Amino acid sequence: MTTTPIAPFTYAKSFEAFDRAAKVIPAGVPGHLGPSEGCFIPNKAFPRFSSRAEGSRFWDLDGNEYLDYMCAYGPNVLGYGDPDVDAAAAAQARIEDVVTLPSTVMVDLAELLVDTVASADWAFFAKNGGDTTTLAMMTARAHTRRKKIVFVKGYYHGVAPWTQKLDYPGVIEEDVANNLYVPWNDLVALEEMFVKHEGEIAAFISTPYFHGNFLDNELPAPGYWQGVRDLCDRYGVVLIMDDVRAGWRLDLAGSDHHYGIEADLICFCKAIGNGYNLSALCGKEEFKESVASLTYTGSYWMSAVPFAASIATITKLKELDAPALFRTQGEKVTTGLVGAAANHGLNLVASGEPALFYLRLADDDSLLMHQEWVAECVQRGLWITSHHNHFLNASLTDADIDRTIEIADEAFRIVAARHG
Image (cartoon, rainbow, N blue to C red; front, side, top):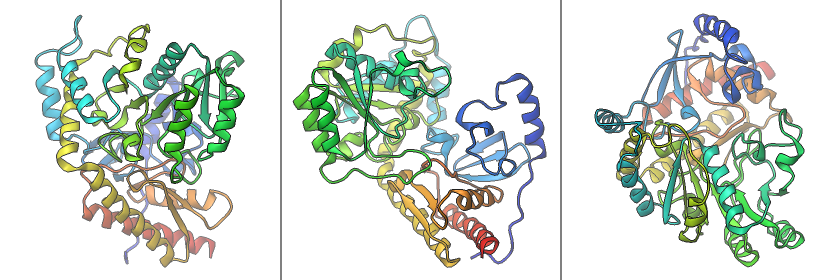
């Protein structure tokens, strides 16, 4: 591996910009991308702002270059600035975008989704993943005339109050009064919950596999999803799959199809438009009238440019057979990283699907050593995280993967020496 030490980056311009931001923007950088969230440890090891992006890389304000395995937390599925997607978006922008009436390009995209997604008989468009999970929940309640929603413990389905916890700031008892919780991969617990609240549960909502934060990701046990489907059918519960993160990275027909079932409602965002702002809820014909009955819209939800970008994105994902590509490249990355750790006497655990892998350095009982390793990687041009699953994009090359392992190896060497 590397023989010449890789000098760590500095971030003078980025921190200067953050000082400006903190004066006029709450927390400087809001939400889970902000340093106040505790996800970036040690804090000073991470830049605050990017300046440009291309393919599998972005650059910060100080000119430092990063191989990016967060992919804007998922939307970068083909590569930053993909020429085919940008050309489609630009062509649409020359015609129309946000207009009093929607463009028929919206219909074109809906038809493409119905043709592509196994469980889709219709598509309803919004802007964020949380828009679609909230719409799915409202649809299930309208359809069943029931209130309660069953979640998998450790879930994340957006930031609307109904998706949060009672001890979160701004969340009141009424927001979560009808939330029920079961462990992942536990059909017995799920059936017990359905029996206990029979006739009261509108929906069961889950990601296709467990990709919570700050812990190893876990795939569905054999037969799990088939069991969930059977129980939902038996008790009249709407099965909602939150495919916001994993959608089109595991299976172009949907992650429910990947695991051998069909959801009633399925939520997409992230990879739908290669960064153009769009999301979609798709579902079965029997729920179409329930969706149509809802008052649910937004100022920019009919924007035509993202529809055109999405058509180009999905078309290209099909041409590339992107799920197979992501699995192959993800296996190369995770195998290389695990091997590099072992070369320094360290145990790196890679979990979840290769296309959305999660990493944990398992050499202490906390995340502290792992956070040290991540910080050393980031400061040398490898953008990974200590708390979240990672993403791949189609522009990632074998040479990029070689460079990834080289940087990771240097970081492992430093951490191993520090703790040796």
